[in-house]
Image 1 (cartoon, rainbow, N blue to C red):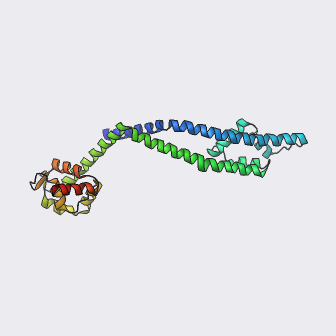
Image 2: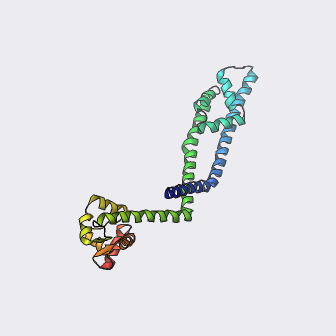
Image 3: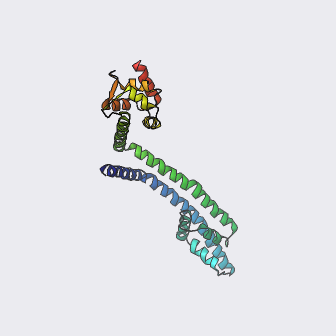
Length: 246
């Protein structure tokens, strides 16, 4: 339970640290988004207010549900900015706002569609990528978290090595011989253990020779763990150990 709690706290700490590291990017992203919404808000508000002024000058006052929606969504800069933001954040079905603009002219529907496309496919995707990269960089800069993660990974690998040793040690005497090692080496579960530890030996004798550093013909548990930790890694690490042994 304590281990599970530690892992939970570590994950929570990583999450909080990643969020904090993205606050600066979030601030500038919001500034960019506000500028974008503000510019298009002015454009649509000007178009709607000009259309309404022309109607009043001509003495044509059209009362309909579409006109009510048009003035409700784009009747002022405040309303236009809210409509534009909610349209790209799923707070409003943007089809409603687009249909309302048809009362002014179809050109404004295309401009509104271009705004939606640019915001969703370009701006928001870039913002998401910046947040993700910022969170990754923040997690990599957390040295304490990195050390803790490496320690937990090491303890996990040691537990796997103990389990593998006990599986090979048929007599349970705390020592494995070359004969026992060869008998278990080609078994699928043993090979899976070795692969999970990034150990890729060519044969049982080569690996056993590298583990038996004292040349006693038998490997104890501590020597087995130390040897596996020393050889753990890409195939090049084991190749170098073989050359040194030779």
